[in-house]
Amino acid sequence: MNEARWVKPLSPADVKGGQQEFLKTSSDRHIVCGTHAFDFDRVFGPEAKQPELFEDVAGLVTSMLDGYNVCIFAYGQTGAGKTYTMEGPRDDPGINFRALNSLFHCIQSERAADYRYDVTASIVEVYNESVVDLLKESRGDGLELTKQEKGGGFTIQGLIEEQVSSAEEVRDLMERGFQHRSTGVHDINSHSSRSHCLLIVNVHGQNVSSGLKMTGKLTLCDLAGSERISKTHATGLTLTEAQNINNSLLSLGNVISALVTGGSHVPYRNSKLTMILQDSLGGDAKALMVCNLAPSSVHASETLSSLQFAQKVSAVELRTPRRNLEDAESDKKKAMMKKSAALAEDEGGVKRTGRATSERTSKAVPQSPTTSGRGFFGFGGR
Ligand SMILES: Nc1ncnc2c1ncn2[C@@H]1O[C@H](COP(=O)(O)OP(=O)(O)OP(=O)(O)O)[C@@H](O)[C@H]1O
Image (cartoon, rainbow, N blue to C red; front, side, top):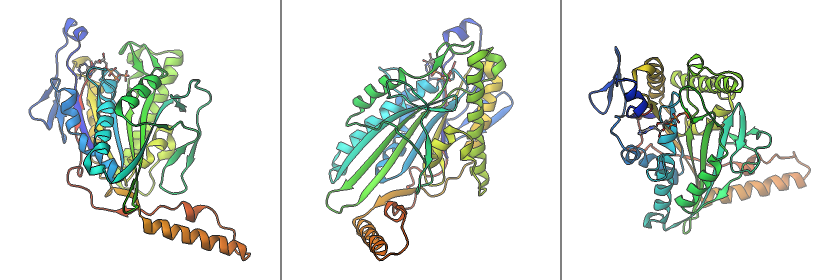
């Protein structure tokens, strides 16, 4: 799995408190944390800027137009810069806006002139093991997840999928949705995200001359911060939130471990987060993790755990990703199957389920060289 690290500069409070940077980088792949050294596909130091990080991510994003499921997620301790990396300030946006900008740029380019595309966006939060649609005005009860008949993932029932045609529209949508996001105050971050927040973009395209259809899915995920509960001095609801956050991050770690060892059972069902991410983390998808790191020595032990988690992620070898393509031939085949199923029923034969008609033919294609292999990591944080 691809990965990047991004170290944020020391915050003014760190400098005032006499904190010093203790992470050392000697190249854009090597990082030293105390007595531990790590090598990653890409390391971004505190001087790195948003466009530089996005440059390494851009190819992955646009590959969704070739029919891939793509997932990019930011991981790291609370206050390390995950929201900064994914969302970023309006005048210096992070991966979310840049990804959508690049996607619509491709859609409007000559290369895509032969295709007609439909793009939808949804914004979801996983808070205390409840799945919340952030585009709904009232939070209501958590949404149900149901297993997809085909495709190896879960569908979020009743989720709003808003039609979008520009990155600006998605930004407005994100700003609307993020206002409903659960945040809190604790001793480490004064505006801490208490939930995992996912921007899910689905693209359906059809080639106007050949009839070839494709679907691509991009999941951009700002995870809640991993944190040592004793350090945040959490009590009451904040403590429950922290326990849920830690449990779901533990489940994510277990899924990743299972993907590393290549066992037959991957425990996706242990948390809502891993259920939602199943079709974007599993073997057929392209995934990249940005690990945000805090440069200050006060967070040394959390930083080391993040680096160790990152090392585990970098060991995941995803299978060759599969493109979600469907051509005119498969449409014909499906129509024939539908017809013969109806005939069988007319003739008093076996009652068919909808399975055959909802089947999608996927064509495995070789992974493109620009996106194969592992990934990179970034540091960030207070
Ligand atoms: N690379 C960076 N450069 C400058 N400032 C940064 C950088 N990364 C993060 N920050 C600042 O550090 C603070 C904490 O960042 P942020 O809220 O993104 O952390 P987080 O990991 O999302 O925290 P939590 O898990 O608690 O939500 C913010 O004020 C943010 O603007």
